[in-house]
Amino acid sequence: MMDKLFEQEIQKQSVFLDSNKISPHYIPNELPYREKELKSIIQILAPALSGKKPGNLFIYGKTGLGKTAISRQVVEKLLEYAKKYNSKIDSVYTNCHIHNTQYRVLINSLNKKGFKDLTGYASSHLYEKLLSYVDSDGKTLIIILDEIDKVKDINELIYLLTRSNDELEKGHVSLIGISNNVMFKEKLDPRSKSTLCEKEMVFAPYNAKQIQEILNQRVKIGFKENSVSDSAINLVAALAASENGDIRYSLNLLLKGGELADNAGDNQVTDEHINTARKIVEEDIVLSLIDTLPEYQQLVLFTIAKLAELGENNKNLLGETIDTWISGEVYKHYTELSKQFGKETRSARWFREYLKDLEMTGLITTTMSGAGQRGTTQLIKLAFPADKILNVMKKQYDL
Image 1 (cartoon, rainbow, N blue to C red):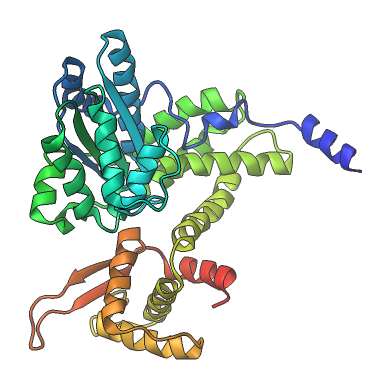
Image 2 (image 1 turned 45 degrees about the vertical axis):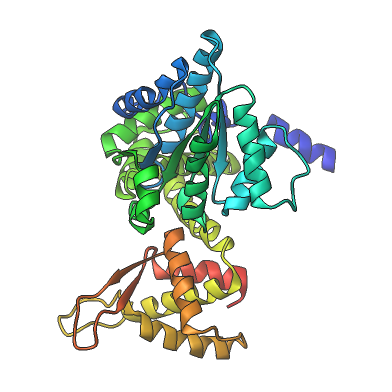
């Protein structure tokens, strides 16, 4: 029975030529519509080839705009040129969504450079190890911190890494910070902001026409000929353009659409496959964001989503849908839900910290109201449709 099933899978026809080429993680040799950004990053990093310290660079913009792909591609090419010209340059990449503290960033950086069994040592010891690694042969170490906004003690980390240049006898440390949160730099203290944002770059969203051309390039190398309809490509491009020009989102739609076509035994990806893929991908996006949240933050998010659901059925005096909530009102409902689910109610101070963390994930946005009779207050709004968040949380967390 098993042999038969395996044989069926092996013999099954597929719309894909190479599905890996459709993955958002695949970095093609050419990245269209990013020539200007490519040139700017090269100009910032190239001085390292002649032994000079390259500037620190902060890159920000919405998700799926090629920030990480371009940065890593330029650094990899820089390392090739370093070998060619005998320049001492090295790099290390850290995904701060996973390594989200100063300590974890240092451990990850050292592990990737061959240092092992460092768990348990103090941050100061790890810092000295990193200094000695750079100082040993006077290299330039370029540290890429992707999703840098996820680092909880980011001001301390930036201060530590940039201070290293004052202590090194030979070599340099240079930072590339990448963030999807365009407001992140405003939360840095002035010293960290001036250091990290020494040079900064904003990646603008792709438009529908640009996305369509990028997808056509991927389809040629990832799908068999005529296995994706023009209409499906146009639909994906339009959907991605409406989601801030997110290429990662468009590739996920195309990949999932291809998988659905294969599972159905169809020989072409159509609009129907893409529309089905959209529902699956959007739920996956929300789930991946929620999945990393601690229990207390999950309950705060659930509270906001429940209020947003109620707001969709209520109007204010102007007849507008209510989609923004005062923090005090959210906290009141949070305490009620905590009791309902038999959870410990955290203090208002902790509640405010949870709101900050949720905003950092991009699940909510907060703004301060204008001054009134009772001063300013924090206004909270969901960044995703309430029904999507509630569906995911009800299934995953039995809330």
